[in-house]
Amino acid sequence: MMMQKLRRSGELIRFGCKSLFTSRPNKNLVSRSVSGFVNHYKSKGKLFELSDGNYNTELHHPCISRNLGMLLQQYKCFGSSAASKIQRNPLFSSLDSRDVSYFKEILGEKNVIEDKERLETANTDWMHKYKGSSKLMLLPKNTQEVSQILQYCDSRRLAVVPQGGNTGLVGGSVPVFDEVIINVGLMNKVLAFDEVSGVLVCEAGCILENLATFLDTKGFIMPLDLGAKGSCHIGGNVSTNAGGLRLIRYGSLHGTVLGLEAVTANGNVLDMLGTLRKDNTGYDLKHLFIGSEGSLGIVTKVSILTQPKLSSVNLAFIACKDYLSCQKLLVEAKRNLGEILSAFEFLDNNSMDLVLNHLDGVRNPVSCSENFYILIETTGSDETNDREKLEAFLLKSLEKGLVSDGVIAQDINQASSFWRIREGITEALQKAGAVYKYDLSLPVEEIYNIVNDLRGKLGDLANVMGYGHLGDGNLHLNISAAEYNDKLLGLIEPYVYEWTSKHRGSISAEHGLGVMKANEIFYSKSPETVALMASIKKLLDPKGILNPYKVLPHSLFSH
Image (cartoon, rainbow, N blue to C red; front, top):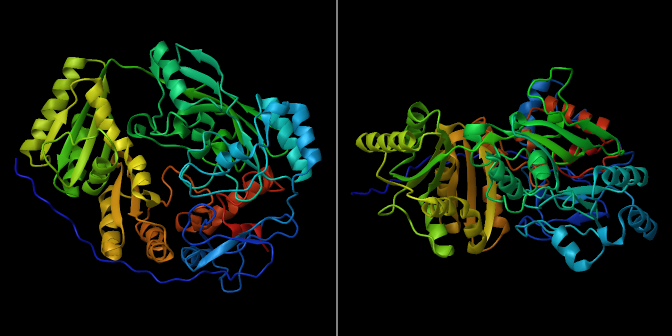
């Protein structure tokens, strides 16, 4: 079969803007280099300064008009100048021996971790890109202990960072400075499962894959499936509103999480652990904690709607010559496979080459190389009919010229090898060297344009690749290079954020903002919206101890 290489080119889009804020010198600063690797986190924007613990939600600045409509345009340029420094909040207390003694009293000595080796791991994100300097990690066993910890930390003004499996990609689950780490890994019990409704109730520290294994014995599946499922915790998934591979079928956690329990900064336990699919009694407050990255409270329990495990699962690996064919294939898949379509993933040839070069035992399932690859998964209840339907769809797509080649997995081992390609990209990137990762939501027709534009901008300086959840418009844009360097980062940022904003996308589709993108939120949210977020933060966490320096811009915490 003839294969053609087709690379779409796009015009370079250049934006010029500068930061709205100027940095004020201060001695109590930690400098983060623009490179963004361990001990060298790069951020942009204004210094974090606090003198009275209050949040600045007025977004005032001498050069900004009072017209909030103009504010949006001005703040789109926020944080695009040279790298700034994050200042430790001087109102936060420092840990002392009395604090440690108190925690040992309520948790027991073995659950108060001061060991340097264990703290080294807990202080560092899994990409080795962000690193804090916490001297203490606490391992509560239940909600009451989380409540006692937070009540004490709030009274002492000790900053904390909630942590689960620590698989995040934006520095949200590790300290920025010396925050106390609260790891919920010991809170890992399944509390209840209703086989009629399919509602699962569990603690926040349950590992996603363990929940999937438990449900498998009951004939159900989790609505969420992630590449990091062997390590990530359900509490962290909820706190970051993780998306995953099957969002196209089962929707987001805002839809599948029926209730949760959370502990606020002052130790109050909010019991919102409902198991009903319908409950219109007042404000549905659980949604404040889904996706807030531990900045409003620590999720301790979750009730989630699971799905029956269906008997027929089929997976096809398909090659396409261009991105337009990928788009048309998605439209056709929704029309012809609608009720059984459960995943529609894509990767480009650069991603495929990276996996083939850096992961052992991986091979291209199709006969020869192509520009794009699609994974289509169907899940239904009639094996014969579902498979015939998928085969007919692929044959029709081949006749229309949308597909160059394709293969359907014949057994579970072959299906696993297909998924290994898609899920192994992140691992391959790590092995290839330095990587700059961006998690973007864009209109489907625009998704690959930013990849082409960035390739044109960077040239031979880096390997730009795109892959992700095409079915829900989520691009994982990755720039791989031999090493981190300021010149390359200066070409990537704020270009990526500005491009995304111009095309009405989101700078964070499913990874969250963390510390990496807290200052960039204005590229996706209006000043009025961000100001309201800051007001909610102030209401629930007046002293700002919960996961500080994350999610919201540092400017909102200053005069």
